[in-house]
Structures are given as structure tokens and as C-alpha cells.
Length: 84
Image 1 (cartoon, rainbow, N blue to C red):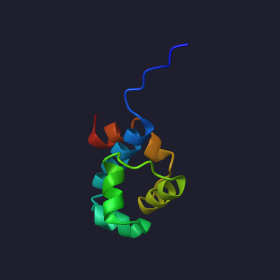
Image 2: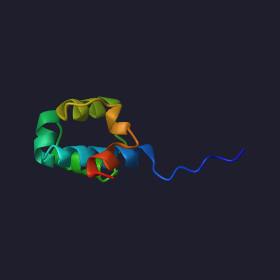
Image 3: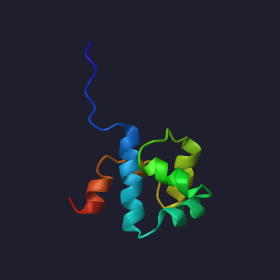
Image 4: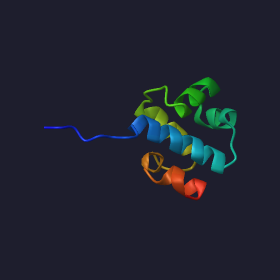
């Protein structure tokens, strides 16, 4: 059986949504990192899709942005925040 083609990986989706929501809230990476008790370098690498982030850190970032982990995996979130 042939695998379905996925154009965006969950990691890329999470990264795009995290960046879009952070920018929409006008929060710097450093401010987000401080609120989530993570390093700025870590948040930056997550936003670039370089990290296979743990569920615990997804929860920390979601809480710091006053949202849910599910919202950060919504395929339409980044588009909505950009007004598309």
C-alpha cells in the first residue's frame, strides 16, 4: 500500500504555528523562552523546525502563549494569524 504524501510534517506545522502565534502576540523569542522556562536558543531551534520537541515542552510553550497544545498543531492556525 502506498503512503499518503504529507507536504508539511507535524514538526514543521508546530514550528510555523509557534512562530506565527508568538509574533501575533508581539512576544520576542527571549520573552517566550523566559515564560516557558526554556532557553532562547531552544525556542529559536524549535521555531526553525530543528527540534523533535517533547510533549512537556509543547505544554510549556502553549501555556506561555495562553493556548493549548492542540491549537499549536492546528493546520490552519498560522494561515489565520497571517490573515490568509
